[in-house]
Length: 161
Image (cartoon, rainbow, N blue to C red):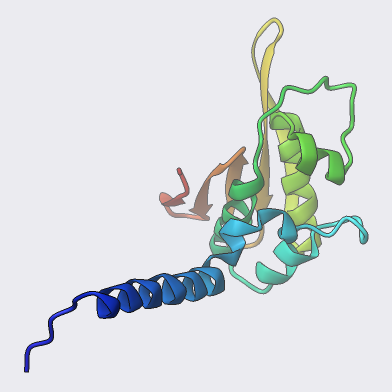
């Protein structure tokens, strides 16, 4: 049996597609639509990321954390003499130092070893990045990219955007 969409039937079909698309999009896309809901300023740390990324192996934890930060990442040069609060970092963004410190804090809360490191390129030019490790390997996190290694193996996974 062939159905031909004409007049009222076509309009009802289009409305149905938009309504279903909106319901499905809201249900699956709420992280994209409301990325700031990821953060809890009242407790002083990001409970959603730490809850979402807990109890995972090192490489999957790094991927989870970096992917959770990407939607809210804003690069904004900040004096190294200024220590941004978490709320200020989310509102105005920060530079490599600020984001590295934030990653370090998240990974420590998740139970991993973590630190930040500085590379000096020349006078007045440097870059800071975070590392995270456990007894299986280590990862390097730089702004919204990461790469992980297992002890005794070559590169395992890269997280370039």
